[in-house]
Image (cartoon, rainbow, N blue to C red; front, side, top):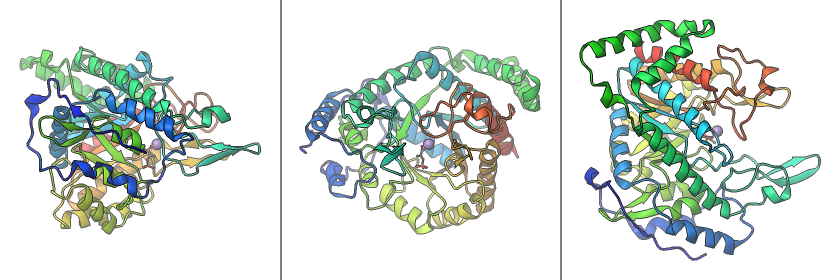
Length: 466
Ligand code: PEP
Ligand code: MN
């Protein structure tokens, strides 16, 4: 397949944020990944159709600007040092159908509400990041799915194929990559409007949280909410400028899974001549694609964005160090985030050796906790779920492990939605096996619903204080 040339990236309004970077390794190297093992890529049926979709994507404007990406790297550097805390949250798999104004607003609202609680608990600025505006592709444990004797390709996310179990829907269609771009653009546009247009007003967000603790089921959290109340009253009495707190910053992120999509959106910044993946501010590499000599690690090693890597319970200290050497050879502050997803039962023994080895190597990546992916199981009736208590326990184990190792627990990575779905067991509504069926809507992994998300934020805020 021929490769579209990297187009210049215009940086409207971003030029004021110049951050000096290292010399380019090699813009030519942006295609080196093509000769490496490329796992988890769709079997596109028509190479010509893929080529035209990629050409179309290569000509479209950036979704994010280099200056914003650099600013985020600075924020993550603060979090890695314990001077900020990262909250990353959103769907396991975004869908085109659910990119509606209401659904996006509820998700943003949930993240903002959690962030206020965590800000109070940590007494630190919370960096807000959506698993939003681009989370349209999923790695799968099997390439195919069989139902009633019929075998079809597995669903790989709306950027690749449809969820419906028909041959037509399940056949990968490269035009979906273009639709993913446009859906990401409209989602990000709305997020930008919500966070700058008054919707994120601190007083408003706090009012919503008062609503959350206002019923008896959640009254356990009323003490902390009351403390935040008094803190707000104190700020007001001191003459705090609440108008300055009407807007906030929210960054976008997704798993960099589809190499053709990410490559088409990797552009050379006209200010610095350095490559940025302008599909999102932050990209991460999944547990299934983090082979140190693989294509995903290679491509992301060459872009200037801050990057994350998921680390599961089988990760060895050598794996973590090899990834750090490849992705962050210059020990650049904010460049590398390790997203640990060990499982509640494993984290207390699996995480400390990694923390110690990485610290002993003189590295200070940002460490964040994904308490979701190590705690997934299937119920007797065949439903993929998680237990809220195990999610909370993994977060607790994360703080404990960092305290023990003397390292910084820098953030949380959560699969959540703003809706009242019933996908995760437990929480104050005590969703049980039978209730799971009432509103199980995810096309991939189970998400915390709005209440469970806030509950987790209140519990984590307590852990941050203690
Ligand atoms: C995910 O974040 O949805 C995911 C697939 O995670 P992991 O790579 O950690 O399994
Ligand atoms: Mn998931």
